[in-house]
Every structure is written in structure tokens, then in C-alpha cells.
Amino acid sequence: MKHLVDAWALLTRSERWRAFAVMVLTLFGAAAEALGIGLVFPFISLLGDPGPIVANPLFQTVYAASGAPSLEKFVLIGAVALIGVYVAKNLFLGFLYFMQARFVCGVEARLGTDLLAMYLRSPYVARLQRNSTEQLRMITAEVGRATAGFILPVVALLTEGLVVLAIAILLFAVQPKVTLAALCFVGVTGWVLQRGFKRKLGEEREARSRSNIDMFKWAGQGMGALKEMKVLGREDHFVSGFARSSAIYARATGIFNAISLLPRLVVETLAITVLLSLVALALATEQRMDQLLPMLTLFGLAAARIMPSTARIVGATSTIRYYASSVAAVAADLTQADPQAARTPGAHGTRPRRAFERLELANVFFRYPGAADDGLKGVTLAIRRGEMVAVVGRSGSGKTTLGDTILGLLAPQRGSVRINGAEVASLHDEWPGLCALVPQDFFLLDDTVRRNVAFGIPDEAIDDARVWQALRAARVEARVQRLPEGLDSLVGERGAMLSGGERQRLSIARALYDAPDILVLDEATSALDPSTESEILDTLESLAGSTTVVLITHRLAAAQKCGRIILMQAGAVVRDGPTAGADMGQVLDALVETDSASRATRA
Ligand SMILES: Nc1ncnc2c1ncn2[C@@H]1O[C@H](COP(=O)(O)OP(=O)(O)OP(=O)(O)O)[C@@H](O)[C@H]1O
Ligand SMILES: [Mg+2]
Image (cartoon, rainbow, N blue to C red; front, side, top):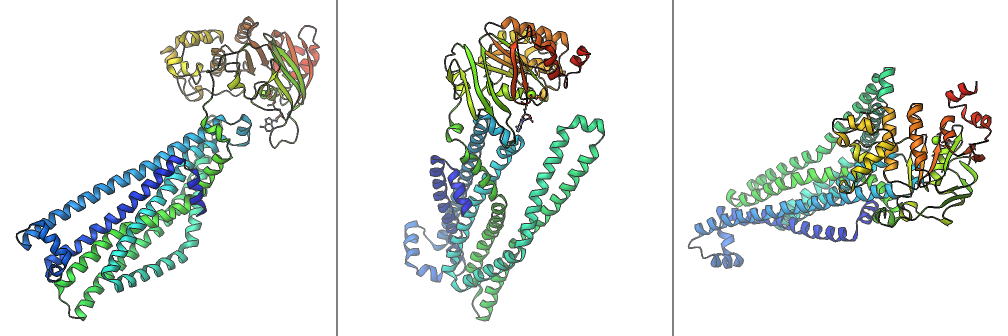
């Protein structure tokens, strides 16, 4: 019940109306099923022993209305009408199943989209607290489980439950005692089966779920670390890990499925028992067989219809148990989100750009969620339009954290970040195109060069001239010109078809495409040779005046290209001033740990 409430809460208003409509249709479906079976009874009776039927006043009305010249002709008309009823009923049921599936799939698509929108639009800090593979799994797997694994089985349970109920009512009306006895039998066996296998089913379900997660981990991590794995020759470790998990999965699934099939066998046994008992009863009471025929047909048809229903009900019940937790997981993620985040599209590109003058950080403190120490400790600095600033410091001193704070990705717990003197709540909404970043761990799309540079811009809005211009500035134009399909060339998964340095320059071109006011480069030239690096820095220098560059680097040569050096140590700025006259010994000290080149220089 709790999961049902959760699932209901997941639906939007219009989806709830559609759910309601589907339920009403389902009710009609069940009635149609019962009607189909029920009509066979009088029909067969007419064939066997018409006496009692003909005496029925309702029959007489129908008979008279049909205008049939004889009872034989009427039976013929009846047969055709019955076929018509079945065709109509099954057309309706086909429509019903389609509507049900469409409803559930629609909910699935909408939930996945909302989740993705929420993950992408929520603040960057949220991402630090969540594993991205886990979020990916929420969208691709959990949403499907919550819908196809929960909502759809609930719909199926409702549908089949109503069918069985309708047929049971019909049978009860015709043969109360036998039906009651059969229902008791089903109830008792069902209860015994459920008691007997409950623990086993629970265990297997648990084992299946655990081993399935392990399978994903072995396969995913093996492929993720492919290069290291091959060099170290550790393929077997991952393959055998996967084999162990999938063996457990296979065994658990086998047992699980076998147990799930039991109820069908029970119902079948019951059906044949009831049918033959009816015959035995008739023989014992010396009833005529042609009187018994309609009854047998009715029970036979009912059994034939109930059997698949039972299978579906049992299947749906165990699926619901298995996947109910997914509903809670999806609900938890969707409800914890800022409700606006999932729906309002980003305003990027829709507002006029303003002139950037000045960025100020005043006594900024930032601590990563769950961290024991502050990442930034009282940072105060100002960067003016057109400046080119180097940020140096040892690994872990807080350079990336500072860059992310400048960009508004991380919101400080204390202190303020102001642009043109005003605090900015959401950089990318209020200042579209203000900033660009070349991250330390950039990510290329498995797509064309063009779409990698003009990142996230619809094809029709991409300006090829600007793409080329960005490629030229990033010193990768010549390489792209040599590619067989130019801008349309694919770069492979994470840019696997390019060299490390080419990948990095593509990521620089991406940052330059929008001609940002503030450009943060986080170790953006680490994979480049000194002369290419120097060329790129020259380009950046030529942008100075319009573009403000914050260059996070471990290289002395790069830092010296900038007019100003900010030195970070343990989250604090320990030096901030012009490059000329800087105590290079101190700067080198900060770099020495990670840059062997500068170590050589110092020596
Ligand atoms: N998500 C996080 N959660 C907790 N601590 C973090 C997180 N990210 C970084 N840190 C810590 O914050 C400190 C500053 O990290 P930061 O990435 O800013 O260093 P950095 O100067 O860029 O180093 P590098 O030169 O190695 O890139 C480090 O001690 C790091 O371990
Ligand atoms: Mg860093």
C-alpha cells in the first residue's frame, strides 16, 4: 500500500486522470470477459437440451425479436452473433492493453526526462555527493523498474484480478456450491504455497538483485579501466568475477522462475478436478449428459481463461515485490529535488549579455560536503576585466576549488562572490555566456568535432566560421583539416580517436567558441608540448582586454606568461601580485612537487 501511495505521488495531474480512465476501461474489459464466457452457457444449452431455455421469458423476447423462422435458424444466428461478440470483445481488449502499455510507457519516459533534467539542473555540489553511475542507473534502470516493474504489474494485477472476480461471480451464479469449494481450495493452497516458499523466494530475490549489481560492476569497471587492465594483464580477474556473479544470478533466477510457475500447475489440477467431479456428480445422481454439457463447457472455458490470469497475477505479484523499492528510490530522488529544477528550462542564451567589469571574492570559505577541512580558507581577491592571472600551488592546495567557486559551480558557505559588485545567484541564468571552463578532467562527446566544439548548441544554430576560429585559437585547426570529414569527423568515445593533446585542444576550442568574458583553464595545457602550449597562451594573451583569463597551472613557463600570479597553499592565497618581481623561488617551491621540469630549472 505504501508503495502504491508512492507511485501515485509520482504521477502528474494529467497522468492521474489517464490512470483513472485506464481503470474504468479495465473494469469494462473484465465485464466483457465474463460476458463472453457467460454467453456460451445458454448457447450450448440450446444445442443440448433446449427445453428449459425456451421456457425462459427473456429468451422468448430475444427469439421473437430475431425474427428467426425456426429454432435451428436461431441457433445459427446465435452462433454468428457469438462470434461477433468475441471479435468485439477482443478488439476492445486489444485496445485496452494498448492503452495500458501506452500509459505506463508514457510515465516511464516522462519520469526519466524529469530525473535527468533534475540531475543536470541541480547545483554542482549535488553531483559531488552522488555517484554519476548511480544517477545514470536511476534514469536507465530504476525508472523502468518503477514503471514496467511496478506500475504495469499493478495494472495487470488489477486487470486479471477483475477478470477472475467477474468469472468467479458468473460461476457462483450458475454453480454456487462447486465454485465455493473451488475458491476455498485455491485459497488454502495459495496460502500454503505462499507460506512455504515465502522465505525461499525472498532469499532468491535478494541474491538475484545483489549478483545483478555485481555483474554490472565487473563488466563496467573492467571496460572502464581497459587500458590499465590490458597492460597489467588482469582480464581474468574481471572475467572470473563476472562469471561468479552471473552464475549466482542464473541459479537464483532459475529457482525464482520455477517457484513462480507452481500456482499455474495448481490451478490446472484444480480445474480438471472440478470438471471431472462434476461428471462424477452427474453420474452419481443419474443426470443426463446433454444437460451437463453446458456446465462442463462453462467451467472448461472459465478454467482456460483463469489459467493465464493466474500466471499473470502470480508473475505480477512477485515483480511488484521485487521492484517496489525502485518506486521509493525514484520518488526519493524526484521529491528531494527543487520542484522548479526539473521543469524550468535553462535561460541560457535568451537574455542579453552584460558587460563584465570586475569579479570579487571576499573572505570566501568553502568546505566540500563531508570533508573534515575547508577547501578554501578566507580567500579574498579581485580580478578585473581583461586580466590574465595564473593560479599556482601544490597538488591539493585548492586551485580547482577556487576556479569552481569563481565560476559559481560551488557556492561558498561564508563570504561572497560578486560580479560587477552584485551577488549573482545563478551565473548561467543571469549571465549567459559570461564564463567558460576547460576542466582538468574534460569530457569529449562521442560525436563530431563540430558538436564537440559548439557544445550543446542545436545544429541549426552552430556557426561553422566560429567553430573554425575556435579551433585555430586552440591550435588544432590543421589537425581537423586533415581529418577525412573535417568538422563532421567523429572523435570516438571520450575522443579516443585523437591524441591526448588533441583532445585537450578540442576542449580548449569548446571553451573559446562562445567568446566568454571569463575563461578558466584548469591544467588545460598539461598534455601539450611546451611550444604548442606557448602558442595557445599567446592566443589567450591576444584576447586579453576582452577576455579575462584565469590559468590554473603547474608550469612555471605558463605562469610567467601571465601578468599576475596567485599562489595557493592549503586553501588560502599566500601570495597575489604581479609576475614581475615575484619571488620565483617561492613560486617554484609551490610547483616543485608536481612539475619535474621546473625542478630541473631550479637545479
Ligand atoms: N569532492 C570533494 N570532497 C571532499 N574533498 C575534496 C573534494 N574535491 C577536492 N577535495 C579536497 O579539497 C582539496 C583541494 O582540492 P583541489 O581539487 O582544489 O586541489 P588542486 O589544487 O586543484 O589540486 P591538483 O593540482 O591536484 O589539481 C584537496 O585536499 C582535495 O582532496
Ligand atoms: Mg585541480
